[in-house]
Image 1 (cartoon, one colour):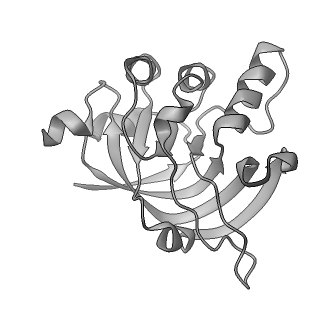
Image 2: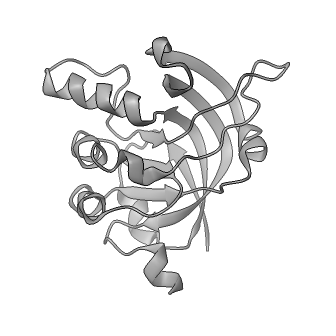
Length: 178
């Protein structure tokens, strides 16, 4: 089944109709963040500091974009392995993140955080980085430029394709397909 979600989310009621393997087309704002940016986001929370973007209802895309094309947008923007963010993801879900996007499996702590927070883990398509970059309509560097490709960018996307990996009940695409 195909679903459309507008980000950031005002509420998570729309998640109850999503199941592992469902196609989701995202439109709106998502933020890029990988390992080092996650470490800094969690450090902000631990120190009682405000993160560089509002976490409530937001989506984080585990992406390391490539240098821009002639139009100024990323040349490629493919997903990275989500498991590398597993040490940080439950804390960020608990702080308000509604959606994470990456590739590959996740651990039980992430699944439990999805259940506890009525949040989603979405999988997008490895090997399709140039196509995914074309779903980006604008981008802005918003935090930690010293991290290079791991800096945090605010992306506006249109019909960005994903598949539900973990739903709000903790069911996984691996179990749905296996």
